[in-house]
Length: 263
Image 1 (cartoon, rainbow, N blue to C red):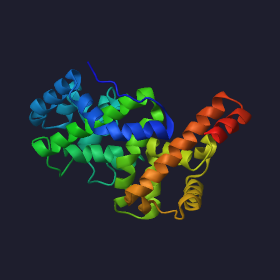
Image 2 (image 1 turned 180 degrees about the vertical axis):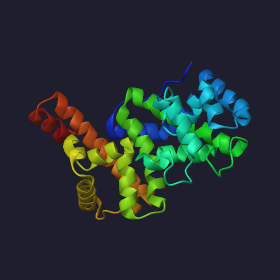
Image 3 (image 1 turned 60 degrees about the horizontal axis):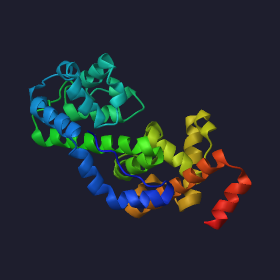
Image 4 (image 1 turned 90 degrees about the vertical axis):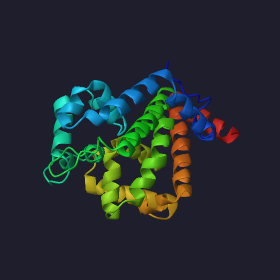
């Protein structure tokens, strides 16, 4: 049986509870019978995998591998995933390098099946990291079944800071953020941008994102999110706006105003 995360309420209050109980709840989720069984299967068998074809041929191994990168929805796209893995990332025209979503290049790098690469499936440390990342991602999915905004908030805690600390220009970091659906959704909501915003030209989106973030935090640079406090402030802003949006979708503006004033 899989552990179901406990989230007693939404918004910032629910987030505070989830933060306080995160380690305990993640441990309970990770040690549930289903997750222990799939984790052990992966660790027992991944060392026998020498190629992209081997990995995609074993659905149980592939489920864990994809899950570690939030790509679990590609489980049935075997040819596509095999191409991602077998191309690797060293060549500019490798499939992963031609996709906007940077998770695919990270996925290809993690296994090392491309030309000129060395397979990493024999490294226990590397594969244990895959297992742990899959459990964290799986926990986030389970949280999302109760409250999707909490899932996005959890994802933001590690992904945004990693992106902010990465190499590349500020514009490159923004374009990477825009390619990651959970981070993009979080930033749009936190900055009060409408759903139609994504229809604008990509360079215009970049301009608006940077301007809105600067107005909200004093800087349009994503590098500010190497500071955990900056990530925490943005998360609170996101959850507060998301809760307001949910209220406005179900009750009148006047009722929303009264509730917020009363709170």
